[in-house]
Amino acid sequence: MILAKHQEEQLVSRLQRVLSVTAYGKPALMSFLRNRLSMERTSPRLTVTNVFSARDGGGLMCQFVVSGAPAGSHPFVAPITQLSFDRLHPIASEVASYAKRREDRASFPRLESNRAPCSN
Image (cartoon, rainbow, N blue to C red; front, side):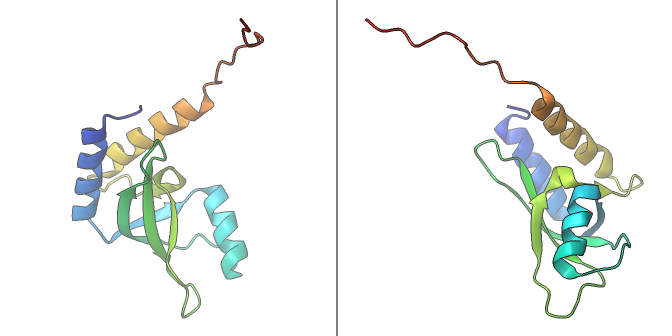
């Protein structure tokens, strides 16, 4: 596990205290949002309105709204690893550290056995 359960809960609690915080989407998220909202190739601000744990190794998730989105647009949910926070914000370094650990974990190949199952 990347963070102990209580550490992840503490991070969620700290993030919830600074809501509504502004963030920016990483390229994959921005591509999805541009497609979904038929937006120009700009980088709109995302206002994070909720943070929660996806549990079972799913990591932290953020609910957010997109500035400049068409009226009536619904909030979106994405992994916190797909968001960047202003480096000057007090919580930014902690979130970046968490995201890096999640990304590092995802880049490790899983070892699988090539052995055939044993039969008695």
